[in-house]
Each structure stands twice: as C-alpha cells, then as structure tokens.
Image (cartoon, rainbow, N blue to C red; front, side):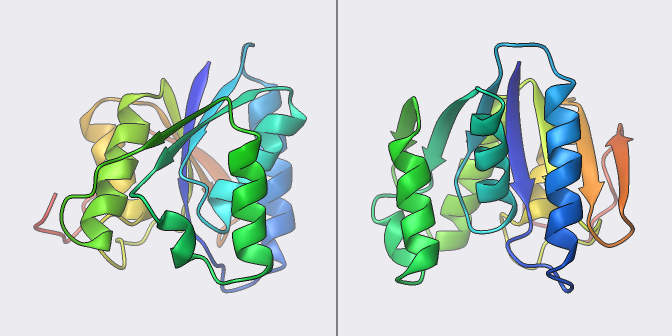
Length: 172
C-alpha cells in the first residue's frame, strides 16, 4: 500500500504529538503490506509519519520540493532529523523548482498525492495558511478521489474524509 502524508509542522499543544504518533501507528499497522510511505519530510507530521513507516518495516519514498530544501530547516536537530530520514529512504526525487517556495511545496504535495493510493492528513480542518499547506493538499487529494484519513490533533478524532472541504482559497 502506497500512503502519502500531509500535515502540520507545529501544534498549538505540543503534547498532542504523542496522540498523533499513537494514531499513526494504529492506522499504519492496519494497512496491507508491503507498506510504502511517501513524504517530503517536513518537520512535524511528515517526519513523525516517516519514522512510523520505518518502524512498520515499510519503505520511504521522498519527494523533495526543490534542490537546497534542507536549507529551509533550522540548523541542528530539525535539519539532522531530515537528513537522517532522507538517508534511510529507498527513493528520493528532487523536483525542479518553478516559482515561489509555496508553489514548490504545493507541487510536491500534488506529486505526493498522485503517487499515493491513500493520504494521511494530520490536520485541524482549517484552510491552509499559505499555498501548498495541509488544507490545499487535502483538497487536491479529494479532487483526485484519493481516500483521506484525517488525524485531527485538536479534536483528537480520526475520520475518513470523502468529499472536498469548502476552503476559501482561489488558487489551486
């Protein structure tokens, strides 16, 4: 099963990451093998997902939004975690940059969706804060009729999302 991830980098309550980790483990363990996780390895949900995929003996495929992406991570732990997970990937594709960082992030999100059979969204259900954010990637997945499992770190509910959310964004 090919599963992609989109999700928040930070949570209002950092203690909720433990609940997200538990729900990711529960969901991933229910999927048929072999398990392939597709991620851009952003801080937060992406890296948590990648770690969970590896713990399930799955393979990682990474979609890097643009060359030099590692420079967007703060030096130290965040960048090192990215590089460690990147090193463990079975496949890495670096996309050619077109436009702004946000446009590149959205292109990576679309690529991730297109390569996945199912999407996990660690998402509070709110519109994306900028182009290519979690809400945009979820909307794109649903437009492509990809099943989305929403792990909501605010309500602590896990839902299957079947129809596109109504998001006030004109750019898609």
